[in-house]
Amino acid sequence: MAKSPQETKLVPIAPDGGWGWLVVVATFFIHVFVDGFIYSLGVVVDVLQKEFHSSNKVSGLVISLLAGISYGSGPIASAVINKFGCRTATVAGAVISMAGCGASYFASAMWHLVVSVGVVMGVGFGLLYCPAIVAVTTYFEKRRSMATGLAVTGAGVGTFVFPPINDYVITNHGWRAVFILFVILLALCILCGMVYRPLPFLQVTDEEKDDEEIFGDGPDKIANPNHEDSAKQEKVALFPSSNERVSDNSADARSLPDLGSRERKYSSRRRYSVQSAGDRSVGLMNKKDVFYTGSITDVAEFKDDPDSIRSTGSLREESASAQLRTAKEVDASESSENVDGADMYKTASKMVALGLLADPVFLLFCVSNLLTSLGFNSPLYFLPMHARQGVGLSSEEASHVISVYGLSNTLGRVVFGIVADHKLPLPRGWGRDTARNRLWMYNISLAICGIVSGLMFLYKDKISLCIYSAIFGFFLAAYITLTSVVLVDLLGLEKLTNAFGLLLLWQGVGTVFGPPVAGILADITHSYNPSFIFCGIVLLVSTFHLEDCFMYFLEYHGSVLEPQQFAPDQSLPT
Image: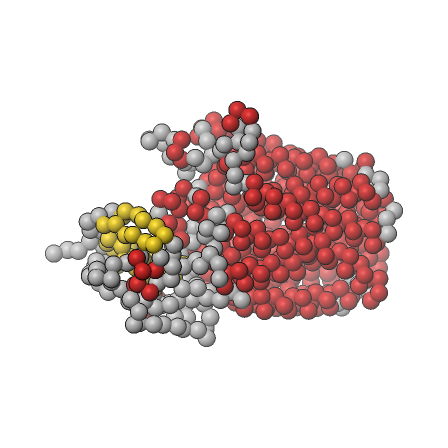
């Protein structure tokens, strides 16, 4: 008698606390060092321009390549994570970044820094940044919004702390000492990466049989101890290490870690076990929510089938009565979803599959992000130079202006992270749809950044520059904080990984070209005001495309994410 097929999913066990908070601390410091270097680089380049007699166009290439390659290498970094894990990717990124930073000490021309900082450190920072996001989202589900919010505030803290530190080091020890300082700090990123301790995962098997209910209220009720399919368990590393292999074949399903209270009815029988993968990678990038920085428990798809969203992939077995396979058997199996993450090319190509560009909503969002990326990096990079040469501030005062940005950006990330998950008390019930609120916050915040940047010619002293820096930093936080959340609102969680991979490429292209264009305008006009006006215009125009995206979605779909508002025969956009 033929037996029905069964599907086995690899489901990570997110502790939502415990060691996860140490992971948050580690990623916080990685953001402090990486973003602190990027956004305080203008203080250093201001000095290097004079020493190397460099143009703004060439010096703009340093920051544009550094940030652009960091973004654009996202799909490649993701493939590395998928095969080798977050820990290995972070260590590799730290070593590469240290090499580029150390080589910068010996620079004798600006183009040397274009290579050592822009290219080499850009690749290294890409390998540091991506695992810092993935590690937190893997460790947290219910508290993910809080955890990622705390982690990424390190970017604002680094931007607040390092500009005055860099100015002090340059004044007392010379600009080369700044690169020595960051070599030491980037070495600490290796220690931070080692904190990404491996997680176990559940192997969940669906069998097409009669309906059954699985009741859960902690570890003792997640599986029936008397059930004929009670399974054995082993522990597996989600962040693999060649030196680790932990197993425990004697424990039954009752000893699984606490997955929280839940009661769900399945149309199939579901078996739970913890399966070992030995030294192989589990394929983290196959998780649908790996780039989602909000609380995953609030997403409709998660409520429908949590294990499908958590899953790093699925395996097909021919017999429902077959025993769960061992690590070697799983390694030898063929999987269309690249479960073990061994195929790096497949992972990267999956993230940048171009078919999604046929979706007009996503295409408009990409064009908007391209324009945003053209304009949002240059203001921070050229602000210290404008403060010194255009307004007449000292180098110390100019560094304080950048620090104000860092402080306000930290506050903005916290505020928008909290507000984005709640209904707003607006008249006529306009604030009831949280997804629509997020898109409006995203749109209006970018418009404000564009307007205040375009009015740079009005700011004539330190106070006015600090006010600009505070406004720009606060509202730019909405763009940084809400991008992945808005993507899910527009496209659904199923398409997030592909959408995020493509979006990183668009952002990388915009970031590479933005600062050099702003630098050319400064060289031609001998003033930084036209550079800020250019940035303000492209930021403002980017919101027009978001408005088109918003109106298109409302016209054809009625609401952004609320699936309960759709008619039974309707669905979210595909």
